[in-house]
Image 1 (tube, rainbow, N blue to C red):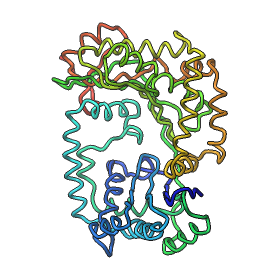
Image 2 (image 1 turned 90 degrees about the vertical axis):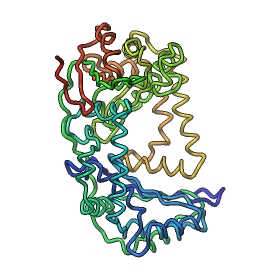
Image 3 (image 1 turned 180 degrees about the vertical axis):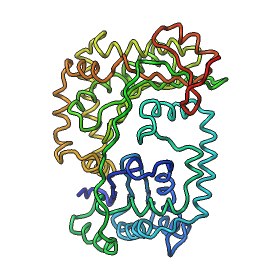
Image 4 (image 1 turned 180 degrees about the horizontal axis):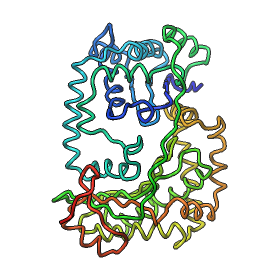
Length: 423
């Protein structure tokens, strides 16, 4: 309950997502389904639904991600019940019209075609494929998969995904538990029991290859996009807090080591960073960003130097530790300032299967991380002998310099991640 403003934030989160429910060869059907949920119901058109929501001063959003999804809205206290009624109508009785699918497919095919001209988009396809192959974490929507999706596929995805057995409702705002329960029971009385809880049994990723530089040629590119990394740990790793502190100072904060070096000091980029995906399975670690073409080799040298540094060549300082911990702990305060932020924090507990006291102990667990912990996880998870270094750019310009670094052997790939025969 939060009664200082007459606002209510509602979210129904679903555990499991595209990685669990998309059929092989149909990558993208989850995205298509979520986008089509606002295209009308069996009794009202999409325009009629949109007009009704505009009169209420709100909107309903649908989303299906890799390992979860949600439907939700932000409303006033007075418009909560009618907005919830529209959400229920859209979720339980969507029209999913064929015409909307064809319109969405056409727009998607244009976007996929345009993505072939963006080095960042190409890296986003090639990097996960190198790490995982044809596994859920390695797949991306293609023109072929987009063309193969039928309305029957969308209907089946809707039926399979929106099941009450895997739904968690979170409500924050100017409403009491009794009022919320009454509204929910009225809105969802016709939703039949069904479904099973999602399982997150991922196949074992392919064995990590020795560190290799993979060049994807984009002739004439004015920048080179870097994606450097390897398969990382699942969210439930015991090293989570140590990894949060380590990666925050290495590449997550604006003043992280790699951004301070490559952007602020050297001026090679407008910004670089790093992240662990922390999925229910072994999501990837990735470091990178967009680099000036003529500084591609120099930037790679700096990336490698900073990775070796965080692993122990340049031990973290007391000042870095205190600043990083404070930033992580204080980031929670901004979330607590709004009903949407509080709802997101609560929802995370259930979507990621965390202890209910997770946020109460977050500051204590972050504070307990030591410099030795940071060095240990950096050495363990930033394995310099098994890094995939994907660089998408103008090959004729960047290849000689990259080979001259001697950092790793070079392999040339096409924009789909397949090896290119070099004459």
